[in-house]
Length: 395
Image (cartoon, rainbow, N blue to C red; front, side):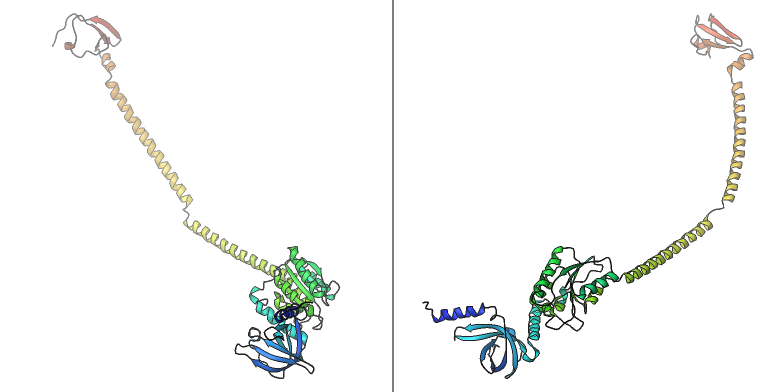
């Protein structure tokens, strides 16, 4: 037999309640009574029906901005716990919703508020789609019409793109885990440019897999931009808020993800024509500039014929002056030759004079420089006489 203290018993019960998967994530509906707000801002009330009642605590951090009324019919979410100090069973509320709107709507709004508070809907983190995707990941059912529609649109608009299907159920119990696995698989490939998450229309229950928390966190964790294309235009899922872009239908998603080859061809043609026009205008402008320069050069260019005639005249005059100068120089040379010839000693010899030299060839110009007995040489017109000085008479 095991004997526990009161505190141990209450602690055991509290742990038992809070670790139970059902009791720690529970939706309860009923009517509010005994509503009160503490000075700290916490709300306390009893949720009852025709059979029983449940004591509830709605703490300030979760109830900010929420006003409750006695007698209101509510659908509340929270967990069962034990308040050990009083030994009371409490339902710790974290979300309230009007009972008339249904539990799925309540679950949707609760998770929406939770994810929005965490920043999963933040528009600043949403990424632009690639302009020209090469590989497009597709998360959808392999048997539905969605796959055919997207293939048709992509093939018509941008056949260069390759569709990579990550098949998954899109409805039922296995849909949410399948969607998460498909998103992770496409991310692990490493060469996918964008992912389309798609299925056709349906009821809220049929589309519920796209509202599961695990799917939202997988979209948020995706390194590849994700386009949500779930249901028809009026269908809204939490995946639409987390995804980088929402498309109203799967076919519209395909049109948003890939460009239109016809439009691209027209734009390229327009750019080509514009470029050709710009080039032609530039060429024309350059040709006009060259023509203006040619005209300027032609105007500024000297008259070559006139210059040539002037040069020929200068050459002719220079030739005449040169001939005259040469003639004058030749006449002067001839005169110098005559003058030199008249000064030639040999010419004096022709007139009967003689030139006397010492034996060493020194010219004797005075009797004072010669000695008796010295050998001398006497040059006449027609030869030389060797002689010896016998006597020297001055004067």
